[in-house]
Amino acid sequence: MLQERSAGSKIKDLQDELSKYKEKMEEYYHKILIYELLIQRYTEQIEINETKTIPDLKALVQPTNSNITPIIQKIKSEASDFLDQCRLAYDFIDEVHSVPYIGTTFWLTIKEMLDNKVADYEDKAILLCSVLRGLGANARIAVVMLSDGSNRPLVTISLKDGCILLDPNRKHDFEKYIGKKNALIKRFSTDKSTVKRVIYEFNDKDYISSEV
Image (cartoon, rainbow, N blue to C red):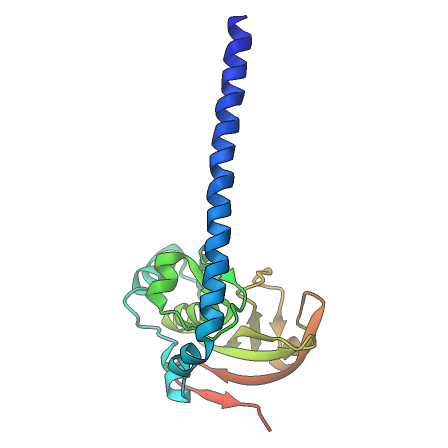
């Protein structure tokens, strides 16, 4: 009987704990609804303040940012080979959770991404590009239009004999897309969508528009 009561007590404690988690999740859910309404109401004002010129956009890629310096130092201490360093940088960004478009343009700083472990798709690409550039890679963010009408920021690393194409927000193997850049972009797919065209590319040094 003692064992039965003990087991029953444990089940009751577990049920109470699950109930508390459920209440907390409901609280978070309703907070998110309020935040969504807030964003919808002030989208126009937010986007006016968040509009970036080409120099502003390039300035978002920060290979010498003090917040990524320790990351670059750690990567270099773990690997001496350049491609291995790039691979470690690609692995590192898994620590930052990808969040789809929230309904308005809002740019995070590198510190905000690292402190909160969260970023939208383009911000996360900027973080990866910044780390790669800090490692000495000829890396760029390529914003492409997909066949489903959405935009996707990819990161390219130019090599002597080709290119590496990375999608920081839908992780694939580091070696999946290695070859000639144009061929890789044509071959790239995510969620059954393929690339229709490249809209623009940029890093801290360059901005290349493909708009007609």
